[in-house]
Length: 224
Image: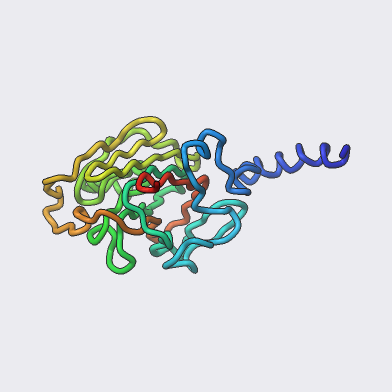
């Protein structure tokens, strides 16, 4: 027992050095989240429960990593309608990814489903984007409030609440999108058939940059 007690601080130190907690390695949920009905979507070790571009992502040191030269669409095997999704992400300089929600497996989720942008807003390469292309925006449809991302290299916390036609995005404690899609006109003027979808897969959309994700958990609001 004494040896085990001595090892725990060492393991904790290793976890902190890697940028991930021991709890994250195990895919643990807080007691409060378990009581609320949240489940972990990523076990920290494998891509079990995920489909699509499984070669473009890896489980590494408890993190879900979008490969720099990989990416693509990594989707949950299960489909969801109304939900609360919580996750953490870490951006590199110029990082670009997306969160797909209510999307079918085939097609571009930004149009056949919905894409919530994941982006380093501070990068000079993105200085001239349209408002609906910045982080947290429902791509092409609703522009997100800017100015609430942590500095590049730090962990961000994001929550997405999808309930019927209402979508809310909370970034680091601040609501950056609060939209009702009923009758909405996309800002880009394009057809977004996915706005009328009631359910589908969710997941990440890699665009050629390494992005780290962790603590991916979901509460299915449609579950009985």
